[in-house]
Length: 140
Image (cartoon, rainbow, N blue to C red; front, side, top):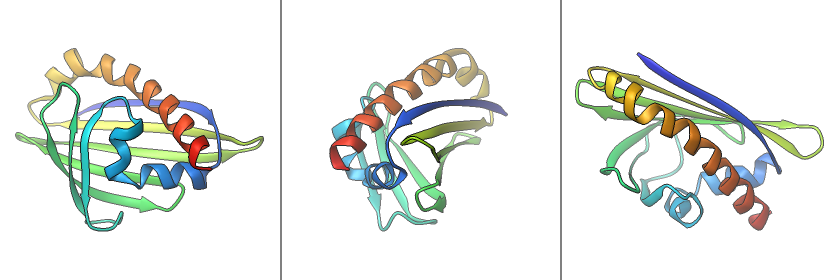
């Protein structure tokens, strides 16, 4: 298993952030990494969707956890393994939110993720959080 975990603090309210992140079809409008995203159903455990990030092939995913305004997680099947990711939001005093992203990869693609994708993913989390902060402010 290979795990990446990063966190940052952004300005905002979790209700506004939650509205943005649960609008899966809208991800490409604000997230600098997304080309196409869709969710086949409600933003709920068991719902499936499809996402294509810029420069990467598209992939199906399943929502595996939802705690409104607090946490959501998805899982994507990989050849012989899985890619699981969680997104946590903790409201802090002063209109701040602690954002934590955890990604776990299992299976034979672990070395590829460790050597090629890991560093880029860590850096990209911060670009996505900055974009999320701006979009949440616009919808608040």
